[in-house]
Length: 522
Image 1 (tube, rainbow, N blue to C red):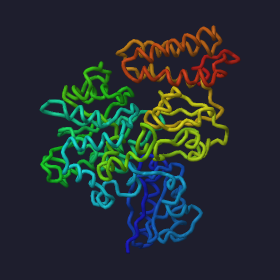
Image 2 (spheres, rainbow, N blue to C red):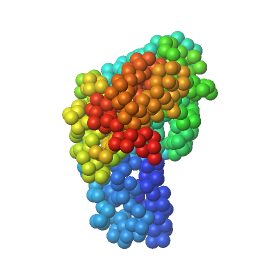
Image 3 (tube, rainbow, N blue to C red):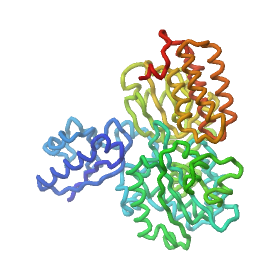
Image 4 (tube, one colour):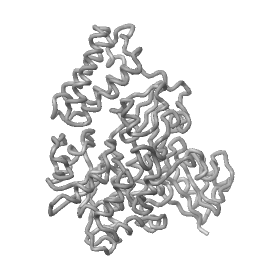
C-alpha cells in the first residue's frame, strides 16, 4: 500500500526549509524504490516545529520535526514509513499538546488535507455548508449567521449578520462580496494560512455570502507580499470553476457566483475597507468618508459585503452544524472561536484556535511557553502595530472584545507579540507614531500631521527636553488622533503609545546621554 508523507507548502514552513526537505524525501523514495507519495499540505501552525513532516500509518499520522535535509536519510533508515521511533519523532500529531488543547472549527482542515484537492476537501465535510445554504432562502442564511454571533475577525468585531442583511436588503442590479485578505498587521498570519492551506473553505464562505445577499461576483484582495497565497487561491478558484462550484450555476443550483483574485501594492492603509475598495477600483488607496457605508455604496458604487478571510472561512461550519453549535463557544458577546496568532519573543510561536475566554496570561505563559530568551515577559502587544501593550498586571484579562476594550486594548486580528524585559517602551511608542506617519494615506490632518509631530515629541522626551511638558503634548496628540482621524490607522495609533506611557512610565524618562531614539536604534 502506498504510504503518504506530508510536507507543508505553507510560506512559514518554506522559509524554514520545507522545499529542500521535500526534495530530499523524494530523492530517498526514488533511490530506495519505496512505495510512497508526498502531499504538500498546509501548516498545522506549530512554527517552532517546522518543517513538520508527517507520515500516515494505520493508527494515525505520526509527526517528526523540525526536520532538516540532513535528517532525511536517517529518518528513512529508522523506518519513517512505519512511523518508527526517532529523536525527531513527536508521536501522533493530534496528541501534540499545542494541537490537542485547541478547538479547531475554522482551521479544522488546515494541515490535514491537500489544499488543492477538491476530493480531499469533500472527504472532510467540504461544501456541506454550501449544500445546506443552496436549499435555504437568503434571509434564512443571513438569520443563521446572525444567530451564530459571528463578528468581524479582521479586527472591528462588527456583527457579520447585520452587514449581510444590509446588503441583502439593498437595491441594486449588481452586488459584490469582497474578501479583505490584506493581512498587514505584525504577528498575523491566519489569513495566509487559510489561503495557502485550505483555500476552498474561503471560496465556500464567499459563495454562501453571495447566495445570501444576492451578489454574483467576489474579489479576494490580498497583498503582493503573499505570492504563495495568491498562486494557491488562483489555482483553487480555477479548479472550483472547472468543477462547477464557481460559475453561472453553483453546484447546479442556478445561483451564479465567480471569484477573482487581486493583489495590492503593499499599502498598509488598504487593510481599511474603503481604502481597499478604492485600490480594487484602480484608484489611489485613500480612505473614503462614511457614510455612505460600503454595504450600500461600496465597490463601483454598488452594495458590497467586505469581510475578512477568517470571517468568511468561519461561515461554512456555521451553515453545516448550525448557529447554536457555533454560538455555544465563547463568552459574552464574543461567540465562536478565534485563531490566536502567537509571535515575537516567544518559545512556542504559531496559530492557536480556541473559544473566546482564555486569559492573556494563559496564552502567553502556558500555550506560548514564555519568552524564547528565557527572560521575563515585560509586555505583550495584542492587535498588531496599532494594538495596546499589556503588562503582566493585566494578564488576567480574558480574550474577549469587550474585556480588552474595558482595559483600553484591542483584540484586532488576534495577533500577539511578546516582548521580554530588554524592550524599551519609549522606542516602541515612537515606532507606532513613525509607522503611522509612513503608512498614512494623508487624507486627514490628525493622522498625517499628528503622527509626524508624535515622532518629534518622542525624540524630545528621549533627549530630556522638557520631558513632563512633552509627555503631556504626546498624550494630547494621541487624543486628537484618536477622535479626529477618519479611519483606524490614525484612530488606533494612540493605543500603543498611551498604553506604553501608562503601564511603563519608567521608560519615558530621558536616556542617560540624551540620545535621540532614531540614533539609539541604529
